[in-house]
Structures are given as structure tokens and as C-alpha cells.
Length: 367
Image 1 (cartoon, helix red, strand yellow):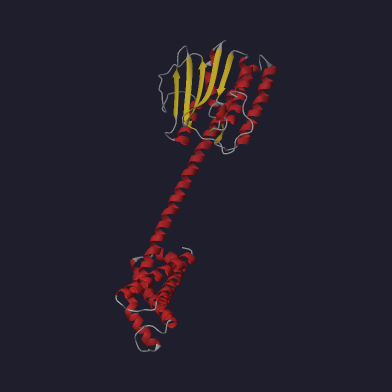
Image 2 (image 1 turned 180 degrees about the horizontal axis):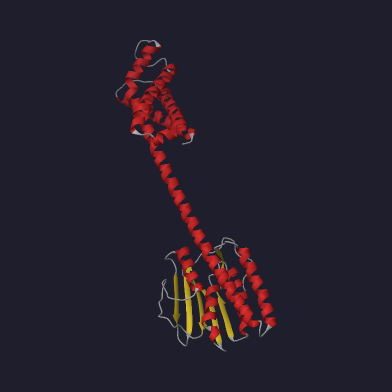
């Protein structure tokens, strides 16, 4: 409803009516000056454009909230006043009209034009009135829609932050437990684990509330976490990591693999005295990114369920599934299954997207 666009549109409409009248007069063999018609119709609708924009600018709240009573008691008299005012201005500007009649004084010409055009002018006024009212309804609808979307977005962000807050203490508690157990047997290893933990916490703090990061950053975090676990388990677990080098710039949710790796150690590898195996594989399958974590151990002791509703215990896996659901809806899969010889595999697939700016440093695995 910018005044320039509004008034220009109204004037253009008047010029179209002038052209239509000129074509009609030519068809009936009447000779009418086209320039005079353009001026008369153009100016008339220019005046209407100005008056209607003034109404929008000054009475918009009243128009949007007007009741039947206010329409009858206020806006109907106002419409008569505006219609007469428009005719007064127009008659002053065009003393030669009406054409084909002897010269008339101002008031007679005004009476002639009001009698001829009052109904048309009232139609214009009330068309503009209900147009403004419709625009008001639309604006309020869009505002409610925008507020609803904003509230939904804020709710999702709050839920995601709550999940992150749930995950970080869980990770910290489990890591500190591991350091505590090493304090009795290998103080040097415990000291090194504390140093590595501080590095991981610095990375976590540096990420802040970021919900998505490049895969290379996630794998760097996993490398440091695996180094801590390797120190803790003193070579009892063979770690394998395979990452397609073309996927280093793929976007993944923050800390999406760490809870799964932590779960593999807590519920499988920690129960072995030797020859444990942990395998992490990242590959693409069409338009999907596939993340797989396989570990040896004691297998699953619960009924298996594949797909997005797979059964599992623990804060970590539940947290991962909740975040995947909130990020991707139904456009992802999550499965946990026993693949034989007491080997458990967790597989996630999610939409494959890449970072706008490629990362400069990549992980040492899969290169």
C-alpha cells in the first residue's frame, strides 16, 4: 500500500477507462478528443487514488474494526462527503466539461456531475473500503501465521537446547567416571585423559548452540574421544574408522556420533577383556548420508526393532533419536541390530547436504 504504487495504479485504471470510452465513441462514429479524455479520466482517478490513500493512512484501524453500526453512522456519511469533495476538485480542474453543453456556472456544473456520477463514486469508495478491510484481514492473518511460525521455531530451538544440555552432562559424567577408575591404576593415563577432556570441552563450548556442523568437525571430535577411550582401555579395543573423503563437508547434527560410540563402549566393549572391535563407517547412498557404528561385545539382550522406532536403552541413543526426529522428521532412519557373533550395529541415514564453505582441515581417517 505504498502511496506511489497505490496512486499510480489508480491513475492507470482511469487511463484504461478513458481509452475504452474513446474506442467506444469511435465505434459509434462520435469524435471525442483523446487527450481530453485521458486528462479527465486520469485526473479523476488520480484524485480518487490520493483520497483513498489518505483514508488508508488515517482511518486504517477504524476501517479494519468497523461494525455495521459504525459503517452506517460514520463511514456512509463520510463516503458522501468524499464523493462530493472529489467532484468539487474535478469540476474546478475541468471547467470545459461537460462537453456539448452551453457554459454553466460552477454550482450548476457541480450539480450536474454529482447527479450523474454519485452512484459510481459511492461504488468506488465502498470498493476501496472493502479492499482495505480485506487487506487488513490478510495482514492480520499473515501476522498470526508469522508469530505462530516464530513460536514454533523458538519451541524447537528450546527443545534442541534442552537435548544438548541433557547430552553434555551425560557425556561429562561418563568420562569423569572413566578417569576416576584410572586414578587407582594409571595416574599418568588419567592425567592425559583429563587434558584430552579439557580439549573436548573447549570444542563443545566453541560450538555454542550450533545445531549443525561439518562432518570433518564431528570426526575430529570423535578422534579425540576415541583417543581417550583407547587410553582408558589400554589397547583392548581395535578402532577402525572409514570416511569417504568426498563427505568431509557434509552437514551433520552436532555430537550425533559420540553418544553412539559412547554407548558401544559402555554396553559392549567394556565387558570384554581383549580383542574388542569398534568400526565407524561414513558413506553416501544416493541423496542420503549413511553413518554406521559397529562394535563387538555381548550383543543385545532386548527384542530388536529396526527403523525409526528401534528399541534401545540409555540417554545417549534416546537423545540421538529425538534430535534426528526433530531435525529431519520422517526423512531419516535409525536402526540398531545384532549382526552375528555378538556384534551390534547402529545405522543412521539422513539427508545429504554440504556446507556452503568447504572446511580447510579434514580428519586423518578416510583421507
